[in-house]
Structure formats: C-alpha cells, structure tokens
Amino acid sequence: MRTAPVLLAGEALRRALDDLPGWKLGGGKLQKEFRFGDFNAAFGWMARVALLAERMDHHPEWRNIWNRVSVALHTHDAGGVTKRDIDMAAAMDRYAAAASADSRAG
Image (cartoon, rainbow, N blue to C red; front, side, top):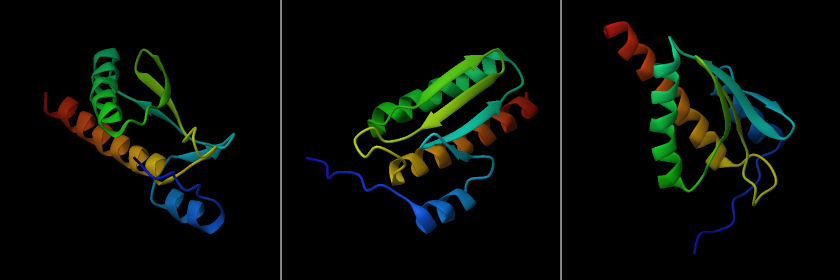
C-alpha cells in the first residue's frame, strides 16, 4: 500500500517551482502551456506522457488545441501539489525538450 502524499506549501513549493521554468501555481495546481511544431508533435508528446502517467498512477488534467497542450497538475488525495506533481512536471519538461530536439532533427 502506498503512503499518503505530502502536500507541498510555502518555501518547499516555491523552491520546487524555481526548478520548473514556465510552470506557475494557480487554483492550487501546477500549470503550464506547452507549444509544439504541429498537432502530431503535440499528440505524440501527450502519448509519451500518458504512458508515464499510467506507470506513475498519476494522471494530468490537460487540453490539446492543435500544437498547444495546457496542463494542470495536482494530487487529488492530498488536495494540492505534492512531490508527485513536481516529478510529473519535470518529466513533462524533459519529454517536451526531447520532442523539440526530434522535430529539429527531422
């Protein structure tokens, strides 16, 4: 059985956000909009993130419009942002950087 996630607040949350460029806190959630070269790149990124989300059992709220994906992360069980959200946000950034590199290489 997994232990209950610990809510991040105050200085701990601020420090975590410092390491996540472009992410902001709004409505108790981490939020960011990703932009890709086209719909295929955006959707491919979403597919990669979806596989990770299943492995982590931690699923984002997101919306896709053509080359943009708006993301909101929070941990329902904790009622706010936890380390799981920080880890997911960092992974999303890594995957987005790889997707950009892939599109430049193609």
